[in-house]
Image 1 (spheres, rainbow, N blue to C red):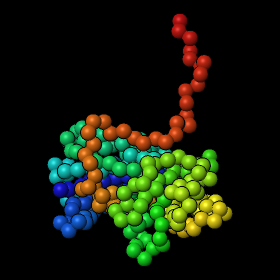
Image 2 (tube, one colour):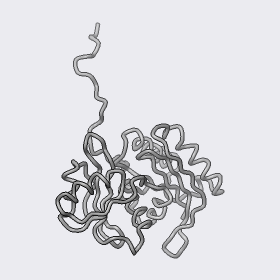
Image 3 (cartoon, one colour):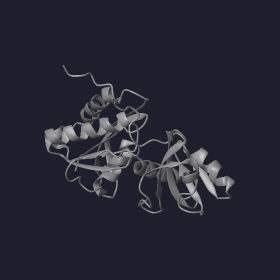
Image 4 (cartoon, rainbow, N blue to C red):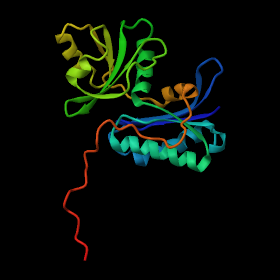
Length: 235
């Protein structure tokens, strides 16, 4: 099985071509990753092309497309979803997906290792307006213990109860400060954490194939809204 995985949810664009190694892992054939706030639409397809060229595979060789569905920026998430839909429509390749926060949890768990602190793992990303994207994960295979949520800082500091908590992501320090004030044992890690396509490719063999339309995960309404009462009157 050859896997094409990509993520565009936050301030980066990453693509990976990989295949399972037969021992529960994957062999990375090629990958491209770059951090930037804007430009996902211009970068994604060239990154896909470069990764596949370096891996020496064509779309006829790809068996599965893996993509993150959000949460993330509206533009970035939409670009990834649109690309996955278009490629699948043109090639009939199956799609699998997971949240951006689940991929980040896998990245964080791998970096922390078995010697890391005890407690559930929360991925927390700054969503602006004093809100954060949060998802709670347990230990082991990181099965999610909550859905992705959009919460205030105070609400996020109470995720999972009052037990020890490991937080990773751009909002980790802020949430840890709020939780510590209430006496909770918290460890903040990896402020620059982002989803990685290589990790998504590792997760891809175990993900369920998407049936029907691939739907983006938006946790808040868009900032830009049509103006009311501004339509031009018909003649």
